[in-house]
Image (cartoon, rainbow, N blue to C red; front, side):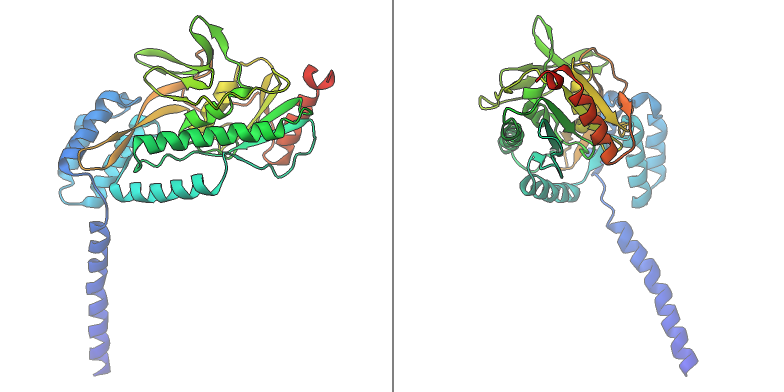
Length: 344
């Protein structure tokens, strides 16, 4: 009788396994057929590396996947990743909710520039520039207001440190994994000095098949034509001693908009970067709402520095240094050797 009961328990366990697997498969989120078609059309026609994907083959594989939700999701994720260099992706409504909660935690629980663990030399201002995660569930006006708040907080941090004794600055983006780049650039305007052209100061750009779209700095503004901008009449702080040398600290944790910040300083006189190569996501994204309420993060261009140089790959620092305190020490040593610090 015991053997019979054990056999029934074993059989019940066998029956439960596929049931659990089926539940897990059913939990895999997918776009609706209409949204999937929209997503594939956008990726095939606009994604930066769209030529790396055989789109007819992708559609054939999706059709052959039938009702296998796990396989369908894998095929869609792979198509998005390959055509974007690993930067773009599909975001389900459920994931948008999770992202919204994360954005609220990050943007509400930390300032734009975290307090550095130490201000080793009173002549050097250290800014640890944090990510800015966009809450895509908010209205555009709410998001714009949040961007300005971040930028103003970053400028306020600069103003607080700028006590008259600072002769150089460290911009640390080694842990900046990205988000929206415009609040970061607007907040750092006091340290940026664009290359002048007839239309203003150029600090970087986006390059696509349509050409080069410069990022420009203005009075309380950063702009890039139709590809983005941010303005605030309050974001006009000027350093007591300007221009000042800037050391950019970067590493493997520097991604996307963090890389945009590093590029904005590349080529600026009196600027030098230290650390390790970046993550290699120096490309531009834009969120595209799909018909079912999901979102496609579409990668459409390559970030460049002010001279138009950029390939979407890892950024190489001017001076390779080991990760950790030695990078900050190297940055401070270089800053203190600059004329602004030696002569001050």
